[in-house]
Length: 120
Image 1: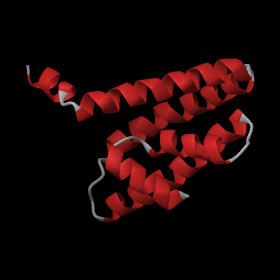
Image 2 (image 1 turned 90 degrees about the vertical axis):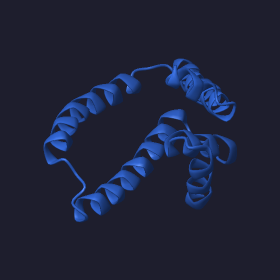
Image 3 (image 1 turned 45 degrees about the horizontal axis):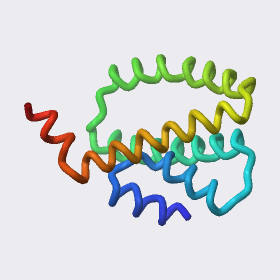
Image 4 (image 1 turned 60 degrees about the vertical axis):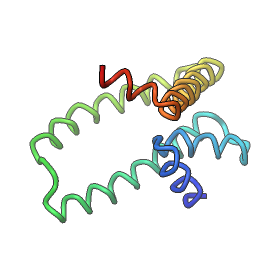
């Protein structure tokens, strides 16, 4: 499954998490909270391996990485706690909205609209 996610994200240019969640939704019947947690863990492992490769080649701004880490750790904890208390229906609405935004963004890229807007 990870190979399929990698190919799709490379072709479409979207984040792996959104594709991973879509595949889990289609092929497995998993609770939405477990589904998001599983996708987050997969993205974390991917990010760690990528960061290790960049770190070993000296292409990491350590100060920026520390600042980003100090911001994302408490925010990640906060949003995980928030999600634990959220109704499943609200989570599906948020997830569906993320799919819609991603789909619209990709369609705009395909038709070159985004590039036209950025250049002008």
